[in-house]
Structures are given as structure tokens and as C-alpha cells.
Image 1 (cartoon, rainbow, N blue to C red):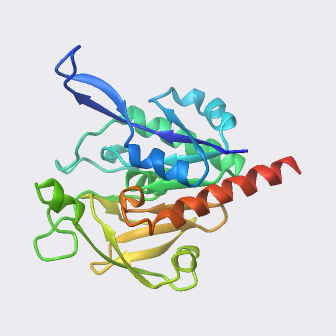
Image 2 (image 1 turned 60 degrees about the vertical axis):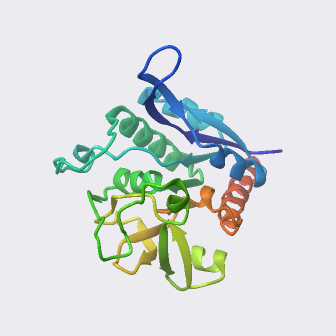
Image 3 (image 1 turned 90 degrees about the vertical axis):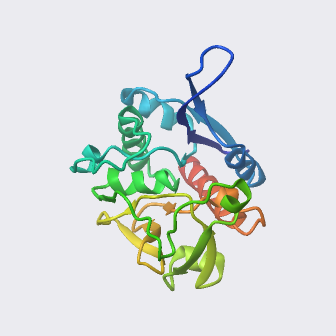
Length: 245
């Protein structure tokens, strides 16, 4: 049986035949393809009402929180410093509700970019609202598409962690498409990778099968990040098997 993975989407306003600012719930094809390669079926989610989180999570086998706009700073008890982009408070509330239900069910969760940040915030952590500098690993994102694809930096894994074991190395290059990062880590997580400037690049839950990465593994074209999706989907399969036994 192929497990069903509930996948969050990014509400964006783009021009269409209907309106120059049409609201569309978007999901990059790369997420879908990565899940398909791992043997899972993605179920795209819109901004549902928080009270529907229980039904949504109960209908799925795993949860993938994807990238998207910045988290509303009020969600973690701070004020917007004027640098936040594409904030969607409804999405924040919905994703917190999804994570709360996933926690209750001990459902495996994979968080990517914003998704990792939301995992931390929903568990009591906070955010750094802007990390881009002109002289560090987190440089301004280039404008040309081909240069964007090459934009990234090295990270160092924490030895002995699940991610270090999964990748079989202590260092690797990752892409970099974010301007915010985890600040205070929620007590239930451990940092499992950092960039040279200390920015948190990956986290693991101490008790649950929750992994979060700051980079976009679905966009790694050489296939070396497929191990992450394969491990996530396998953890979902094991969770389903355990619930049936």
C-alpha cells in the first residue's frame, strides 16, 4: 500500500485569465515527484479551518509541511520588524493545528524550509526574522534563474544524529532559498545541522519521528536528497504497520 501524505500548499496571488491577482494554492511539482519516487501519494491541502485538522490528519498517514511565506511574528510572541514577506496568519493557525493533531497521533512529519520553522514555532520556539548578509554563507539570492539553482552553501551535520547517519557524511552542500531561520529552539528538538554562520539547518524531535530541514531537498537535482524522502516515507509505513498490529 502506498501511504497517503498530507502536503501543505502555498497560497499565492498570480495573474490568470480570471483576474490579474488570482489566489491559487500552489505546490511545486518537485515535492510531488519526490514523494512519488519514494512510493507515496501526496494529498494537497488548502488553508483549511483549524477545527478540521483532526479529520485531515486522521485521513492521512504522514504530514509534509512545505516552504512558503514567512510566519507571522505574533505567532511566536514578537512584532514584525518590517522584513516579513507574504505572511498568511490563517495558514499559520491551520498548520499549528495540523501539527498538534499529528503530535497526538504520533504521526511522522517532515518539515521543509517554512515547514521546519513552523514545527519549531508550534512547539514553543522562535524565529530570526532576517539572516541575509553580504559576507556570510547566507548571501542575497541572485536574480537569474540559473544562478538561483546554484545558490547555496555547506552545512555540517551533528555526529550521531539520524540525519548524519542517513546521509553518511558530516558535511554537504545544500541550496539556500530563505531569509529567515530558527532562533530559540523548542525544548523537544535537537539541532542536527548548522551552516558556517551558526544558522540552524536541520532539527530532529527527541521523541517523535519528526525531521525538519531548512534547505529544499525536493529541488536537489542530483538525487542525493532522495534518501530523506525515502526515509520519511518508510517511517510512515512503519507507523501505519505499528498502528495495525
